[in-house]
Image 1: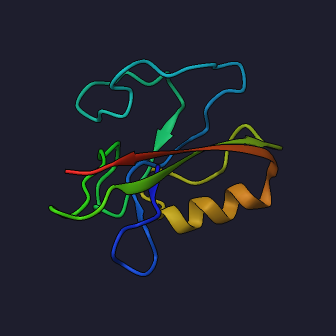
Image 2 (image 1 turned 90 degrees about the vertical axis):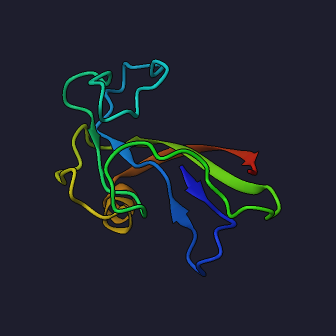
Length: 112
């Protein structure tokens, strides 16, 4: 989950999750919590731009316009990216793009 409108010049990663098995069709509510181990074994959540691992919900600056959040699911040539939970979003994206077969995206909007 990536904030396209973050006032950084480079967007803002709110959630990076990978090594999701290709037979998994959905994630349960609160799956991005690091306090509750709700993701199936083997799925990895890595660093976000908050400097934390796991889901960090939308949080645009107060009184800012609604921000566009890009959520993308990727079909890959590999089942494991070969990176870990301490990997930066940019490096995860690089490895994903090296293994990309297809992708689908959704944009949602949120404000405070």
